Image (cartoon, rainbow, N blue to C red; front, top):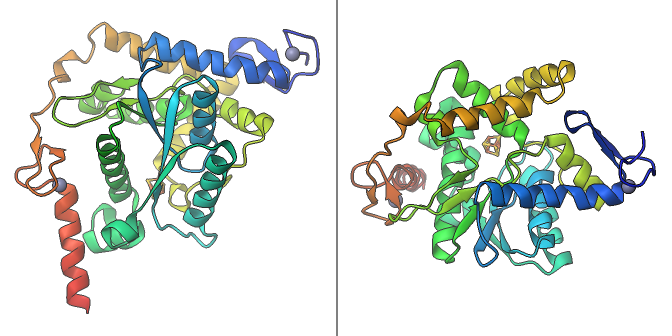
Length: 313
Ligand code: Q46
Ligand code: ZN
Ligand code: ZN
C-alpha cells in the first residue's frame, strides 16, 4: 500500500475514506480533519480558552497534541480516580499524562478524587451503593462534575473531551436500541454552555475512528496507557463496539454513516420533542447547577461518604 500523496510506503489505510497515507502525510492530514470538524460544528474559535480532559489514553493525549499543533490555547485536566486494577491504572495514567505535559511545556491541572473529596472511586461505589458495586456510574457522575467545576473555576470557555467515533457510535447504538430519546437528543458534537453554570462541551474527535487515533499516537511517538480502565472490561460499550466493528469489516464506513445520518436526522428535528431541558438551579451547598431539589446529587453522595467514614472511626 502506497501513500496517495507521495507514493512512499503507507502507515495506514483508511478503507472508509479510500485513502492510504505515509507517516508524514498522515500527521498532516489528521489535524486538518479535526480543524475541519471544529469549524463545521462551530465548536470554538482561536480566542477561546480550552480545557481538555485527559486520561492518559491515546484519544485524549492525541487530542491535546492536535489542538496544540493547531495553535489553540488548551490546558489539560487530569482526574485521579484511585483505580488500581492490579497494575496501578490510575498511577500509570497520571504519570504518562504528567510526562506528556512536561515534555511539551503544557499546563496541567490534576484533581485527585481521594485527596479532594476523601475516597477513591472504587470506595465511593461501595459506600454510596450506586451502580450495584460497579464504579462506572459514580465515576461518570464524578468526572462530569469535576470537569464542569474545573472549567468554571478556571474561567475556561470550552471543555473538550477525547470521545472518538467508535465511542460515539457505541453510545448511539446503545441508546437507539432502547430509543432513549432524552439521551439521544443530548448526544452531539457540541453541547452549548448554559447561563446557569454549565460549560460548553465539545468532542473534536467525534468523526475520527479509534484506529486512526491509535495510529496517530504511534506515528507521533506519544506514550500513552494501552490498558483500558479495568472496570471497562466486559462493559456493554465494548460489546456494542465489537458489533459495530463487525459491521465496519463488511461495509467500510458503516460506523461513520450510522453516526452522521443520526446527526442529520436530529438536525431535521427527529428528536425535537425531547429537546426541552429541565430547569436548573444552584445547589444549596456547592452552587453548581443541578436539577435535584436542594443539594445536588454529587454533594449528597459525598455527604453520605463522610457520614460512613466518620462512623468508622
Ligand atoms: S467510568 Fe468505569 Fe470508565 Fe470510570 S470506572 Fe473506569 S470504565 S474510568 S470511561
Ligand atoms: Zn506521503
Ligand atoms: Zn452540590
